[in-house]
Amino acid sequence: MLLVLFQAKHMFADYFLQTPKMLSGRGEYAHLGRAQHAAVHSLGSVIAFLLIGSPPVFILITVALEWVVHFHIDYFKAHYSDRNELRPDQAAFWRAAGLDQCLHQLTYIVMTWAWVVYAS
Image 1 (cartoon, one colour):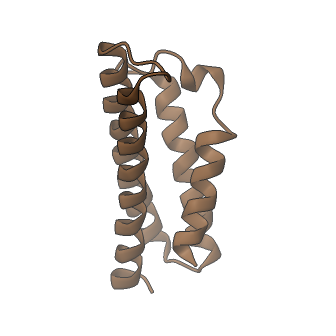
Image 2 (cartoon, helix red, strand yellow):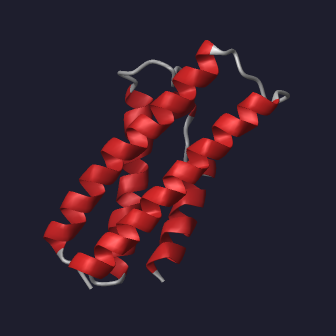
């Protein structure tokens, strides 16, 4: 169930809740919009963990780590895409997008594993 909740929150956070501020200038490291985007993901994970009754300390630690990981995955994808001037009509653009999504999904698998081992 937890992994399903993560999938739903990821879809909303990545595809419905991003603002123009979150999407512009993402190749810069100190980008407030990317930090806000990662925070939206983290908030969604807090909700998912609360829905299944996770302990507050576990939620705090796991979601803080998720924020850091999400921020950096998105930064490296944006930086690589900007540096190589990738566009949606190029295969490399989609490889970068696919790797980005794969890394986010692996993050959710690790978060679910951590919940099973430490919080369930």
